[in-house]
Image (tube, rainbow, N blue to C red; front, side, top):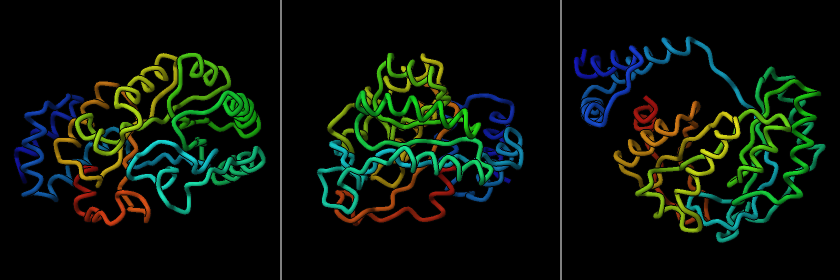
Length: 260
């Protein structure tokens, strides 16, 4: 048993916050004792979450047509992909998807939009759909709509939205190598706006986009500073036509290590 990993795990189990020095030690020791890392990560999961998972079902409110230049994204109009042309999902399609989520026993239903933000027309439509989904299906409703203002966040809360997704994607220092059409600060500000309005926030990132171990650590520390309560972890699947097409995908062992 690796005593250094155990000591850091014990700190986490006692609800302590590990610092950057401990994180550096963990990174180094985990390379030598990979299975110890997995063992203690699983112990931490069992302690705080038990042997249960939560499932969220999502539907695309708008697919493609995004004017931003995120290098990993096939929905950008800047790249030649099969998904770059915009398509808006109808009310009927969204409600049918919510009904199917209910039948599947899923408690939370997310509506996800491509693009930097949503129009006033779409926001008004979403307000009605959120109310309808909550009233007809009894589902918790989440949304990922890009950058939103304080007023927009408040309207979403009034409609019954409970959670907002807005990923940081990577560290601040790596962000500019992946996205140039908006700033890291825009993402941080959107998270804070959503929280101030009373929304719980789901925020994480994507791995395998050329980031370093330090980038991963810095993103995690920023998420902790922002007090987000759910962290989605995405791993690059390179899409032909995007700038990251041809990037070597992460090995399963590295993916497990990042999660742990």
